[in-house]
Every structure is written in structure tokens, then in C-alpha cells.
Length: 539
Image (cartoon, rainbow, N blue to C red; front, side, top):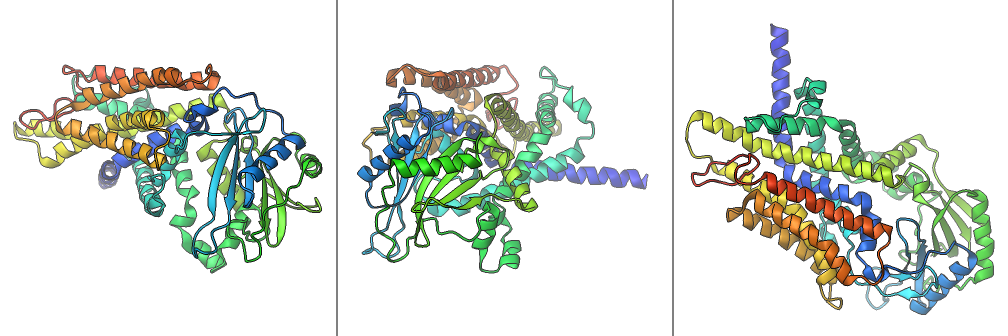
């Protein structure tokens, strides 16, 4: 009996930990998980966000002539550039991107190097003007682990710490949930959406969504913590490397020494980069392909480092599971290869594989859709857990009598509506801002984000005014259903397969939100707004 009692006491403690670890930062966890799920299609959503790039000519194969054209375009755009990088088109990013950094103004001490980017027509290599935007995919990706705005970089570290805390609490909730739920196989096959007791139905939904993809949740949570290990656990690096932390990151990337990479040129290193020409590019490109006869090249860079002008070729990130693709570094003058940047260290490989599993850049289209589905299940697991908290406490209050529910319960119910139903509406609002804000608007990326947070805040006001789940879900469904129509009105060319896929995804999102709105009709148990006596109807 003592052993059983001790075992039951431990399980009850884990149940308490599971409940409160999930609730304390549950709304933030839902936002992190849902935005991270959309980030599996980061490049596709970024391309959708720039309709000026739609319908351009097909991508040309990488050769010396295309590199020479890109180099000529750069010298026309930014003759004083200190480094530049050409990101090549592929099946997920149909248009090449040319980015560069210019030296800071010597008259302004402390100024950082200025970063610029232009898009290149894949057929002609000519620059293409595109709207100023954060990009839907880039925003969801950054929001997923930084909670950042476009320009307010001073909040990045604070956002990463908050996301790290929320991720740690989710990991704790997952582990304690494993202890709490003893009957995994029974939970897997038990789902009673029509149960008379709302608490039973919500518990079944939470258990099924939690058990169905549990290995994915554990992997994505642990690997998410590891991606920012240097921020959360710097003491180990400091103990091994002292103040020379750059050596640690160089070893992690497979570089021989800490590299400057042209970001902060030394005095006397601010002269313009040389124009190599087609012949030099032919020699360099042929040497790079000797190392990677069957591999794709994703990017080519020209930069100044340690008094040398270097050329760097990056292998495509989709070629292997491990994060950080190999890089070949050449001397631009002599054409000699200086270094193959890769790592064989077991610890670095382990980290790279965990990072690669988290961001899934290796995944083809079917696997990314599968991961997307797992991400939606994880979002549903968090959402049902938050709603279950309200359902359970309402049932307990009803058993005690017709007493009015407390302020804390009503607050959680309102925040559930805003965080769960309001976030998809805010995401749709960001997409509308991308299309409808004036193209010449100053600080346009910041304005897109202001629309996102304003719509999200408006969903809380709707909940406070008694709008409830049905109205917010319904508005989200209408908003997503209107995005394909907006695409038709702003189309510059016939949509390709990628853009049609995005529009179909928008319509699928509208159908899902519409279904949830229908299930939240007044007679259903999903409805969760305060009643006249402060009680919660349904959820």
C-alpha cells in the first residue's frame, strides 16, 4: 500500500506539474508552435509575399556567364560593396537573390555595415524591383523563436529568452504528461467527441492529439532548445574557450579559425571588390564541382577577409540532413582552394543533425506536408489543453453549486479565445497588409507587423465584448477565404504550381476555421464565452 500510495502521489504531482507548466505560458506556446508549423513553408510564403517576382522566366543553370552577369549587376547597383552573396534559384525559391554589405560611413563612428538585397530575373540576370516586405514566411519563422518586429532588434534577445522558457516548460509538460497518462494505447484509440460531458470529450481530444505524434513533439522541443544552446548555456563554452568564444563557433562550422567574413572591414580594407570576369568564374566553378560532382551549389559569395579577396561556394542545404552545408573557400586572385569548411567532430555533427531535424530544410514536399500536419496536431494539443483547463474548472464549480466563476477563470477563457482563435485571424491580417499597404509607405515591413499585432489585439477586444469563439473563428475563415481572391486581383501572371498550392492551403485553412466556427454555434459544447452569470457555456 505504501508503494502504491507513493506511486500515486508521484503521478498526482506530475499531473499538477503538467497542468500548470502547460497553462502558465500555454498561449505563447500555441503561437510558437503554430508559427513554427507555417515556417516549414518559409521560402514558399516569402515568394508569395512578392508578387512582382511571379511569372518571371525559368531559372537558368549555374555557369560562369550567369555569375559574371550577377557580378556586373552588383557593380552597377553598389560599386562600393565590401562583400556580396548570390543565392541561386531552386524549386522552392524560383528567383535569385543578390545581397551585399557596404562599409559604414567613416564620419559616423559605431555605425554598422549596411545590408542591401535585390532580386534578379533568372533568365536575364537583370535586377527586379520588389515591394518592401518582411515576407510572410520570414516573419512566421522569426516570430517562432524571437517574437520580434522587423526593425526593433533590441528585443531579439529578450524574445529568444522568453521562447526558450516557454519551450522548456513545454518539454516539462510533455515529460510529466507521459507520467500522468498511463494508458497510451487506450488514449490513442479513444475519442468521444459526442460525449455528454464536455470535459470527457476535450480530454479525449487532448490525449489523442498528444499521443499521436508524441515523438515529434519531444524531438522538435528538445532540438528547439539546442538550436540556441549558446544563449541558454554559455558557461560550458566559457569554461572550455574562455573569452575566445569565436573559436568555438568556428569549430562548430568547420572553419579553421574565427573569421571576420567581411562584416567589419579593417582600416585600409574598404576599397571596392574586384571584378573577376567570366574566365575567372569558369576556373573557380570547375574546381568547386570537382569536390561536389553530384551536389547542387546554393550560393556564391565574394568577400574580403584578412587582406585577401575570397570566393566561397555553399552546397545546397537540401542535400543532407545535417545543418550547415559544406563550403569551399578559394583565393579570388590565384584560384587556389584554401579550405573546405565542414566538420567531422561528433559533438558538432550531433548538434548539426538536431538543428537539421528541427528546421527540416532537407525535406521534400511530401515530408514537409507531413511535418506540417504534425505541427498542426501539436498546436491542437496545446489548444485543447488550454480549453480543458476551463472546462474542468467550470465542471467543478457546477458541482459546488451555482456560485459565480472567479475572475481568473473568466480571464483564462477570454485569453483562450484571443490566443487560439485570434492568432489565425492575425496571420491572415499580415497577409492582407502585405498586399494592400501602399508600396511607397516608409518602414513598410514595420507597418505589416503593426497590422498583425493590431488584428490580434482586436480579437481580444471582440472576446471581451462577448463575441466568443464562433465570431473570431468565422472572421478568420472569411479572411483566409478572401486571400486567393486578393491574389487574382494582384496577379501579374498566371500562377504556377507553388502559388496555386499556397492558395489551396489558404482555402483549406478557411475550411478548417469555418468548421470550427460551425462547431462553436450556440448549441455546441465548444462555445466558451462568459454567460450572464459569469459561467462558461461549453468550453
